Image (cartoon, rainbow, N blue to C red; front, side, top):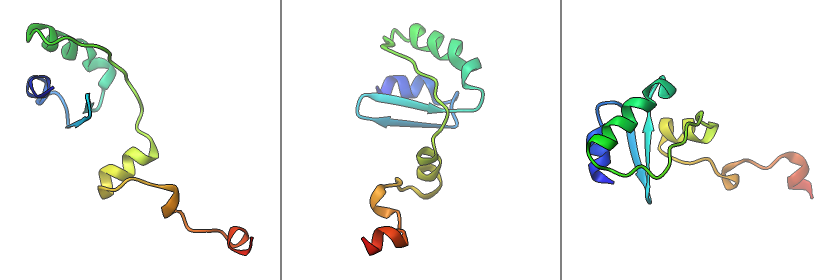
Amino acid sequence: MQQAKANLGDLADRIQIDRNILSLYLKGAAGAVPAVVNRLQSADIELLSLTLTQPTLDDVFLQVTGQRLSADAVPETENEAAA
């Protein structure tokens, strides 16, 4: 995992490792797919899967605040408080 991170570091704006998943955050990700695959192959790093996703609201919130959104953090509405 660290070897893949080192090989791809200059391609991404940000890299995150969570469990066994390496996430690259970059603009124009679809166009960068060939470069990512080629670099991993050149370094003899096996790519198990590759997924392109748009950031969610939770992803953006985490990047800005460093904290995840959670249902517990959502304030109760008046109807829920009265029930």
